Image (cartoon, rainbow over all chains, first blue to last red; front, top):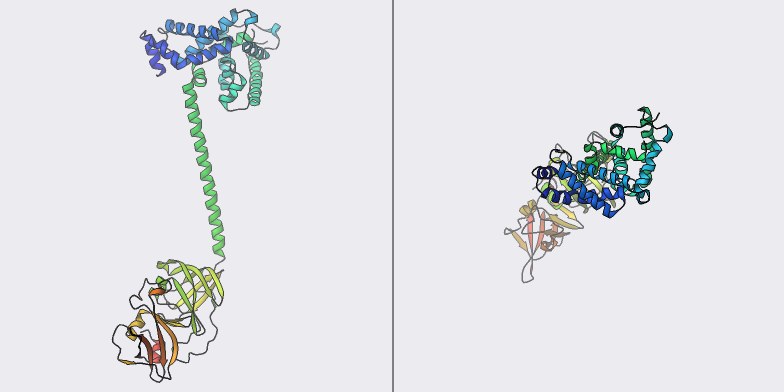
Length: 184
Length: 284
């Protein structure tokens, strides 16, 4: 079934919308949530919450990219859940990812507070400037939380090459954030 | 701001970008595009390889051709088979150059016969033949020498001439008669269809005797195919159908004497009057 058809089912308030979303994207959404939370039960719960959020938001929303829309909801809910969890329960993956991203922000004491919307705009702009391959690697790693080995498998590159590329992307991001005045 | 803020901030990344990388359908689409790209690259590489091969072949071919004289007629021919031979005592033929069979025959037999001394010897097979240009290639053996992969030409204006290109050299042969009507081969006489007409095989002979005259000289075995010594019949491969008849020549009588065996074993010798001079020079 096409994404548009699923959206039409949501708009028509048909419960089949949830059914087809689950068939089409259930496992991907679950994988995404699991990458962030590192817990199977939590991930399943987040996916169900995602379906509910989709049901509630479509309509009035009518997303052009249905999967991206659903995945963003799932990711947001997962990060929100992650943020609320106690430190000991935190996913090792997210700890690793945040640690990597913090390399782009060397001196925490000199950070200026930024609106999440601003950060999003900057990141979006930064990614758009990158070559296609780098965009994919960056999104897979820091948006979807995929492991280096998974990215290597999906992109056809060696793990070493992925690590090197990620290191260079982070370096560029740091430079970009400095240029944009986020890091003084 | 910390790493988690950046992770949260990434939720603002464009939907299109996310969809293009994370949606399996889009992934498939991208992979398909990539496959097409690879196919194009492969096709382009194959074309390039073919082009380089073709150019190399053309260059090598030109180099090879440049070794041969472009105007073979104007080039100085090397005449082989030019060994002087004693005149034929019977006046049948005196040859010092290559002769070849009647056009129809050697075209069909795909063989060339050369005259060396008194006998015709088999020279070799013609492996391919281009009729329109009177041009064929083949392996030939003459004077105990094997000529492999020769090209043979016969000039239209000089149908009795035969040219043979071999190892960048042109060998020139001249047939004394355009249509030789008979040949000796390995000590045996071969007749062509014109000769069958001449000696009247199949028609009642005018004279016959039971033994050749004493002065008759044995010419050897006459070989012919009474049924079909015709174009398309290969003397060599059709040997089982050939008739072998002893042939004598009497200079006193001016006759050929051909043996005609009968079913009861008796032998008759048919006389075929011939003019030795005409025999030699004219095509029947």
